[in-house]
Structures are given as structure tokens and as C-alpha cells.
Image (tube, rainbow, N blue to C red; front, side, top):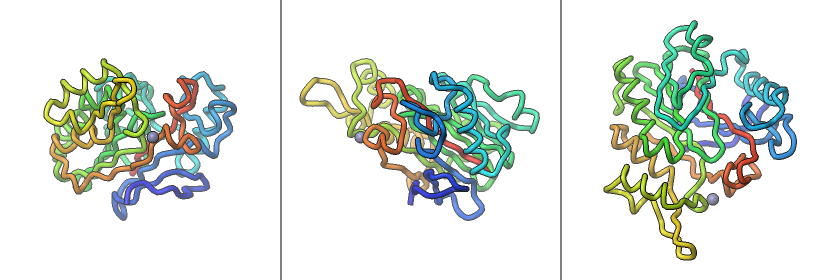
Amino acid sequence: MGFILKQQGGLLCFSLSDFGEGGPRALFTTRLGGVSRGCYSSLNLGYHTGDQPDAVTANRRIVASALNIEQGRLFTVKQVHGDQVLAIRSEADIISKKGGMADAVITHLQNVALTILCADCQAVYLYDPRRRLIGVAHCGWRGAVARVAARCLQEMYLLYGSKPHDCLAALSPAAGPCCYEVGEDVFMAVKEAFPSCRQGLLTEKKDNGRWNFDITQANFTVLQDAGVRKENIFISKLCTICRQDLFFSHRGSKGATGRMAAVLIQ
Ligand SMILES: [Zn+2]
């Protein structure tokens, strides 16, 4: 079924039902329903964007309230387009590790909203129903090339014995292959990281010699290569650049914009 736009605790956001009855809630917020103004209008959840901090705090409160959790349990990290995975293994970790440098977070704990902020980048959601373990990863082109989703699965295995073939995964809305134009640097990195399937990921543009990149297909490949079964991977086909009525788009707005949140909570 993938992500469906619906009301969640009074907030309109994308929600995934494929993790099953009793599984974690997987949400992807839109730009709608917040208090920020101008290019951050209106549900901007990123403090680092240049928006008024008070507005971001108010917006995060709206999301926490929609999830029916305290705002302190909205767990965010400092995302740096790297491949570090942070494990939240105790209640104390929620306080001590918040804001740590990482691009993926995993936990077995209940009632902790693992949150990745995006505006065109893709979020990868992971859930092991056998071990009741969840993870979410920030996977733009750098994250895809660095196989961050696979790093996350590896950490789930090392710390909890989680096996990729037991896991369910979902790929959030992101910049689509219709709009995501890249140059030589990304072309070379993708070619090197995915030598056998490069052609499915990059389409040469006739007019300017650049390429269109399919980030969803790249992350899908990363997950499959790591052992996740393809029937267990749920995909949103929505493009954040095409749908700026619903989403913040870093590329679509030339950088001055807000951030959506990919949230996973059990
Ligand atoms: Zn598009």
C-alpha cells in the first residue's frame, strides 16, 4: 500500500500501514499544518534552516502531540550525510545521545520517536517484527552511495541479532527520477558504488549532458543487496520536487526551505 495521506492526531501526514497491526507507526510529515512563515511555511521541523527557533519548537510540539508523546521523546540527531548509526539502548540514551552526529538511529525501546529530517533526501524505515526493533536512516545520494541503510541493518544484527530477511523496510517520498538532476560528481560516485546496475539508476539527459538519478531505486538496491526481501520493501513514488504543494524541496526552492520529518515509533 505504501504511504497514504491521512489525519494522524489532528495532523495531516503520510502514514504507512504495511508494518502491520501492532507494528510501529511510520510517518512522513508534509509542509502543512505548522506555524512557520515564508519559505518555511508551515510545518518546518529543522532548527538549522534559518527559520525562527520558536516556530520550529511550536511545530515539533504539534508533531509530538499528534503522536501523543512528550516532545522530549522526539529523537533527532545532527545529520551530516555520513554513515554513523546511533543505537538507543536505554532510557538514559534518549537524553545523552540526542543531537549526536549520526545519519541513522535504531532502538528496541517503546515510545521513542526516531526522527530523520528531510527535504528531497530519502528516509529509509526498518522494522524487525521478530525482535521488535526499529531503525530509520537518512539516505540522500551520499547516503545511498555509502549504503547507510545496509550499515543500519548491520548494526541491528550486531547489537540485537536481527536478520535482514526478517526485516520490513519502507522508502519515504524523495526527489524523484523525474526531477533529480545530477552532475559529474554524483554520476561518478553512483557508477562506482553500483557498478552492475548503474544504468537503472542514472538516465542521461538529452538537452544538457547531465543525468537524472533514481534515489529510490538506489536505496532499494542497497536494501536488497543487504538481504531484505523485495516483497518486504514498501515504496512511496511521490516526488518532493514535483509536489512542493505538499513538501519542502531543497532543490526546488534553491536551498531556502524547511524540513519534513520521517518518524518511526513503536
Ligand atoms: Zn518530480
